Amino acid sequence: MMYTSVMEVASLQFRTSPYTLVVKVVALTMPLYGVSLLVSLANANDTGGNIYAFLLSKFGMLSLSFFAEAVLLSVLFWQWLSRTYEIRDVEIVRRKGIFLRTIKSHSLRGVQSVTVRQGVFGALFSFGNIILENPLLKREVVLRHVPDPEYYASVLREAIKNIDTPKAVVTPRK
Image 1 (cartoon, rainbow, N blue to C red):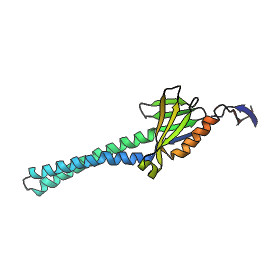
Image 2: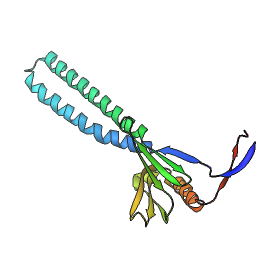
Image 3: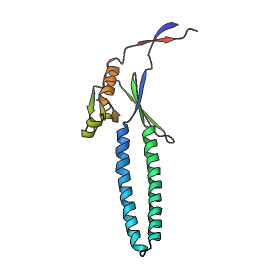
């Protein structure tokens, strides 16, 4: 093995907190159940007291509701699964999308502060936002719903501190 002094392309990749997925699922499925219940109750009067017609309409509405929920859960899960952050030596890369892929890269050069913001649920379930302030960009870069934001903020602070330090890596001899 031969040792050379080159920039190491170390990276740390992570997804947004799964708790945000749970919150979205609950927030979007509850109205779906409410609408399903209201439609079922409205159909109960239309059956004219026929118990079979009432059960058939209730079963049809429930199956439609479960189908809509399955589609909604699939979309939310794939959205969550396809959004990742990657902290590299000199940049942060944000990826999202499966079919329509978006990749944004933000340089860590010039970042002057790394701030963690957590709400009540974020502090309770250990997730939050990391805000990077770069006066050259004249705006903040916000990493949303990061699991264990204190840890990733410390990784970012360390990467910013060592941004111009070359690292020795092992490369195979030819």
